[in-house]
Amino acid sequence: METKIFQCNKEFHQENIKEAANLLCKGEAVAFPTETVYGIGANAFESAAVAKIFAAKGRPSDNPLNVLVPSKRVAFSLAENIPNYVEPLMDVFSPGPITYILPSAGKVASNVSAHLGTVGVRIPDHQIALQLLKETALPLAAPSANLSGKPSPTTATHVIDDLMGRVAAIIDGGPTNVGLESTVVDCTGAIPIILRTGMIAQEDIQQVVGACHLAPALKMPSNKYKHYLPEVPLIVVEDKEQLSHAIQEEISTGKRVGVIKASGGHIPQVDKVYLLGTNEEGMAIKLYDTLRSLKSSEIDVVISEPFTSSIIMDRLKSAATKVI
Ligand code: TXA
Ligand code: MG
Image (cartoon, rainbow, N blue to C red; front, side, top):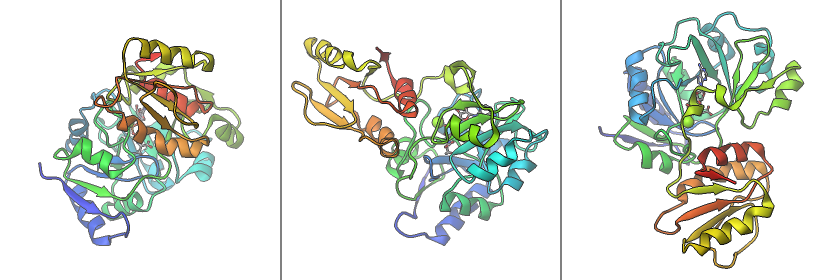
């Protein structure tokens, strides 16, 4: 399939957005930026359009997609039996990096939610995503625009690497500003439950509605699949004391070793050092680009030091071949 590339990076091109919206209205899949990561969108009302997302990503059909909507009103129109705590959460955190899993009113195609009877809705905080929602007047199913199992894309180049020839169009809107996927909150029960951590934390939610729980790791439909797999094996060290031992062990077997760390310079005998920086926002922006930049032509294994940010550690561990 021919993939059109629309430039909206330096300047906002209204006619490009209109053309992309047209493709979406015709039932095509189009990748575009949101404030978290790039998404691959399709008409959430039409199961054939949604099926194109699963095909393009190589995504297992039992892993549900979240749906982007322009407003609380549209979000509520897709759901029913909405718990009272949802509205105050949306008033504080949306538009923004948070997805609410609600009981579905049966309006979106059922393959969107892997036939679970729920719908995950998010109001994006990004001009291009919002403009597409306005032009199409459709809710857009929009998971991250990576091939299944690869790190989420934070630049158009990442999307092009994964999806060229697999979607009708890709909108280049420059790097995303959050860099990590949204917090996913199950809002089908008496208390909100976080299924995936993100920039909006458990404490933030608790401050608005009192109680909020963290799900046990296995509750999330996607957690049975390995995520964010880089090109070379990744060892995540949880105990900083173990870091130099782990590095030495890999060097002693003749491997070319890379190290992911917050700051600091060259480490003797280590081939490459990848710095994520010391503040959480900066790390979030760099993480996936770093994971995608690990090349087997340069190193045989990469070792990550422990990070105090749990949202960074969650993602690193999800990408790891080994955690020690
Ligand atoms: O920030 C984001 O959420 C990005 C942007 C593009 O919107 N999207 C994203 O999509 O990260 P994806 O598919 O990579 O992650 C959405 C997560 C999945 O892990 C999926 O299992 C979960 O949300 N999810 C979606 N709908 C669900 C549902 N009805 N029930 C339970 N989990 C759901
Ligand atoms: Mg994803």
